[in-house]
Length: 312
Image (tube, one colour):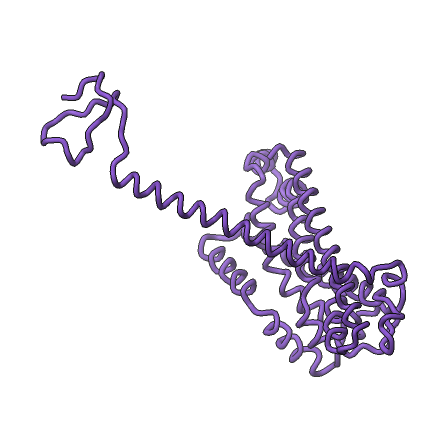
C-alpha cells in the first residue's frame, strides 16, 4: 500500500494485482501522458506558426498594394470619370458608384431571404428539415463563383443582355448562405427566456419572433450582412460575365444597364498593358481593399457594442 508520505505514485501498469492506490499521493506523468503532451505542443506550435504565416501574407499584400497604389491616390482620382484613352487623366468615380449600386441591390435581395432562412432554422424547422437546409446552404457556400455567374448568364444575360441587376443576382446567391448561417448562429444566442416570456404572455409564435427575437439579434444580423456585402464587393468573375459591356465612362446608377465596378476596372486596366492603366489598377485595388477593411472593422465594432448592450 502507498502511504500518504510517498512522493510519487507508481504507474497503474507497474502495480501488482490487488495493490491499493492512494488518491492523496501526487501523480507522475506516464509515458503515454508525456507522448500526448509532446503531440499537443507540436500541434500548438503548428497552429501558432500557421496564424503568423497568414498574418505575414496579409501584411505583404497590404504593403505591396499601398506601395504601388498610394502614389496614384488623389481627390481627382476618386471623383473623376473614367478615361479609357488616357487612364492617367481619369478617375474611378463610375467604378465606385457602380460597385455601390451592384452590392446594394444584391444586399436588398439576399438579406431578407437569408434572415427568413435563419428564422426557419432557429424557430420552426424540425431535425430533418434543418439538416437538409443546412446542407443546401453549405453546398451553396462552396459553389465556385464562376458557376453561379454562368447560371445567371444563361437565365438573364443570354436573353436580355448585360445588366447590373444580373451581377447583383449572382452576388446575392453568393451572399445568401453567409447571411443565413451567420444570422442563424446569432438567433440561437438569443436567451430562451425571452421566447418563454413571450409564450407566457400568450403572444403568437410569429409575433414573438418579430417583436422579441429579431430585435435582440438585430446587431448580429446587420454585422453578418455587412461582412457578406464586403466579400461580394470584391468578386470579379460575376462582373466580367454579367455586366462588362459598359457604354461610356461616366457615372451611371441604372441597374438595368451594365455598370462599372472596381474589380472590373482593375481587370480592364491590367489587361490594357499601359503603364498608366496598371498604376490605376493598383490605386483602384488600394481603394477597394480600404473599403472592405473598413467594412469588416466597422461590422465587428458594431457587433461588440451590440453584445455588450445585450450582456452576452
